[in-house]
Image (cartoon, rainbow, N blue to C red; front, side, top):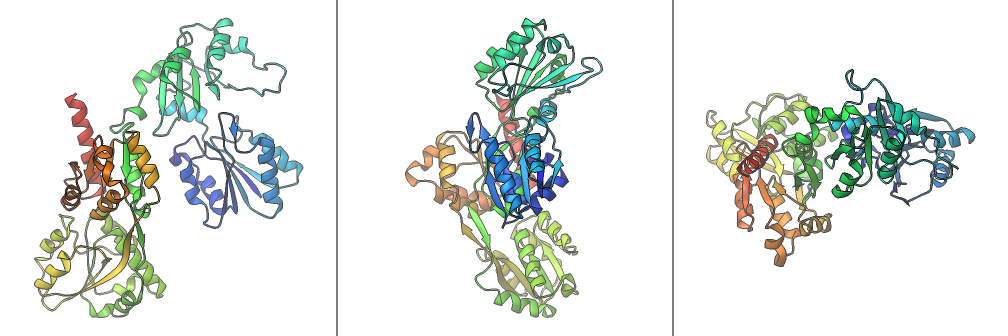
Length: 507
């Protein structure tokens, strides 16, 4: 079976649920240049992932080669998901691929996707139809089959139309498109917009008229992929632009959290308009031995309190609980405490409400919250990172508690993207680096050549999630300009927005 799947216009959030199901079930994923790379996260670890992208004449594989590849994999008994940017049947050559499959007697399904022809203008604040401006809509290829003897586009009909025209794959031919429309009678003052990388943080919009747009696009250096919109509806962008008006629009921000943790921060910053570069400086891994954890789980009935200091601690603990054939019922009778709302939310995921969620999301905050409890002789289980600060168990012990601290996970340095990071810093394309823990600071610092540290970081703003992380950063020579007043991802994002807003206001 082959699924011809529309991957949507670029924003991973615009993928359909059925498309995700197809990616998950695939033995082989064959994907395009315009299919968001983030979508591959849904593929099984065992799935074969084959890139067949076409970019500006640089074809990894010809269309005939792609057709043959899909047929070959399916004929071998594989479930194939062919992931195509936008919609497979809107100038996506999906029809040709389906014909090849039909001829080979291979079963297939078509999974429509959100086409960039609609989505890119929408993200640019351009409604393609509007009762006052356009009652018809025409999609046109801007790149006809070069093997055809002549154009099959009725340019006179397009010029006579007063509706909206949308050209796909037409950036290279923009001067010819505008010249033909004017030659056939379309008003030279007709508004035109080009939207590049629509629906993504790289989106760029250039507007003009049929008479001026080619020159403006050339001045802006705008290249493919882009959608061309011709018509009066383009005027509405002045009133309806929303995507490019977000507070962190076009800010390049480095996220240094571990890959398992980064998604929340990346989603929040991306939703605010930032272009995020994920440079995981740490990896979260299980402890060398589960024996201490298993012993603690076997003795849960001996404890009075269970304290979690991170989402990772909750996740690893309950995964180990499950491995022992147990669930939340094993914690009956225990009080729980969680540092931070994210940790508390993760705990609720397993059916438990925390008895304590301190107002201050540091270890010191937990101690203050415990001040109302008599801990004399109470046994506390503290599953957390091996590298965690010692203040919490030490101070709990001073309050009379017997604390058993167990390493439920470890953080290790990651250098996988050191080259990518250094190249971006050398190009001065980074506006901000975010640190969410002391370990991310230390490992990020280790990625940079000591001799070039000051030069690379000079134009970069540093944002920290809280005072402990800030102290570590300053000790290592970073200048911290942003510190979250609330030590959470939401608090960090709010502080970043405030910083850029104040800087813009000062100009």
